[in-house]
Amino acid sequence: MLAAMPPPATSPSLPADASARDRGDACPGTLRLHRADDGALARVRVPGGLLTAMQADALGAVAESLGDGELHLTSRGNVQLRGLSPDCGGELAGRLGEAGLLPSARHERIRNIVASPLSGLDGRGAGNVKPWLRELDSLLCAGERTAGLSGRFLFVLDDGRGDVDALGGDVTLLAQDGGAALLRIGTARTVVRIPGARAPGAALMAAEIFLERASGTGAWRVSDLPGGAGSLLDEVVRRWREEDPGTAVTEDRDCPRGSDGPAPGVVTGPHDGAALSAGIPLGRITPAQWRSLTDTARHRGRGELRLTPWRGVVVPGVERRRAAGLLDELGATGLVVGPDSPWTGVGACIGRPGCAKSLADVRARAAAAVGPAGLLPVYWSGCERRCGRPRGEWVDVVAVPGGHRISVVRGEERDAPVSVPDSPGSPGGLAEAVASARGTRG
Image 1 (cartoon, rainbow, N blue to C red):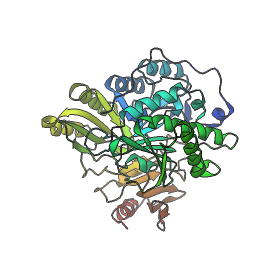
Image 2: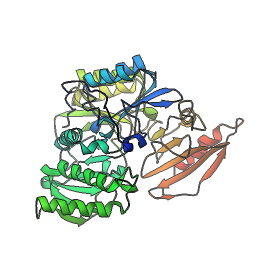
Image 3: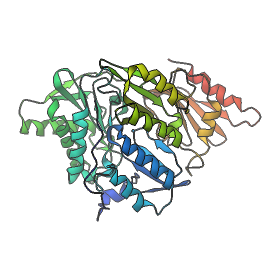
Image 4: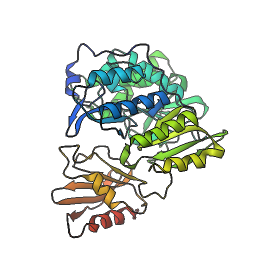
């Protein structure tokens, strides 16, 4: 099972200096707010998506007292607070620091770690990623050099089922049977087999070598690096063998990769307990929904919530005999608790009025077009940037001047797009086009 990070002994203070790379990296954090059209925005990193009930309470409280009241989940299992006043930074940092959500001010934006949400719950993974998560986060926060990573750099901890490996991390660890681990750099097919106990150290080494290679290049992620993932992996293997000859084995292999997160419903496994998996419509959690989740975790679970990169929440440790009833209670608040919900697989960026670059209120358009659950997920974007878009196979709906463009994305390939003009006299045309695209699979 996974456990959330313990709170630090003291609250963090703002760093006294910032490098040129830091000034060039505009990713928001908790200590660096982003100005949006609906107010300031803070992005709170939640490594592995793991929160204690106390930390969840703190997030909900600051959202209600300082922001728009809602929590907005990201595609990396983090939380965004929106509608903040631009001068609330000091109070926000202090309150989140007291809750253990800011263990290091210099590293808060680089704690980008996603982990298999069901690790240790359903018996499917090859290994439990809990030790990796805790150690890697500690190593990142303790390192002087790691503070130079960008807010875009992503670590992935996959328990062997291939769920988060499909998200395309910069440095990925995959658990293997027998206690070994595979290290992947970028999305390369080549991996390195190493002892599982030393996997977090290998991930740290890869990140530090990336920083060496990225110096002066403007590269924020492995995909930006001249020479790509291959040259970086070669250097990681060389240095690893210098430290421990004979333990690193390079392999070419196709690891199982999925693109779907936990299905909404009751999750059972080899243990007596169960978990509840709920989807969040458009990734936006109301105060009432958040209180329902945190109360369930505190009083019916083991005091823990797991935020998923698919904008869902898992509540572990509930009694099996009570699981179905508790899931119904979550569903009564408007959360997605079953595969037949019309909101299953529907996502959207913030759109208007929150984003000045957006050409439409895509969340309202998505709500108006929602219908029977489709075979493919659909993601609505207010502009060509497609912030927060999924991976794998999905229906891409993008607002363009005068209408929307719809296409089906299959990995690196894209079907011919269909343009649907805005038509006040026939608003159902867009919904019909989206439903048609979602109901086809190649």
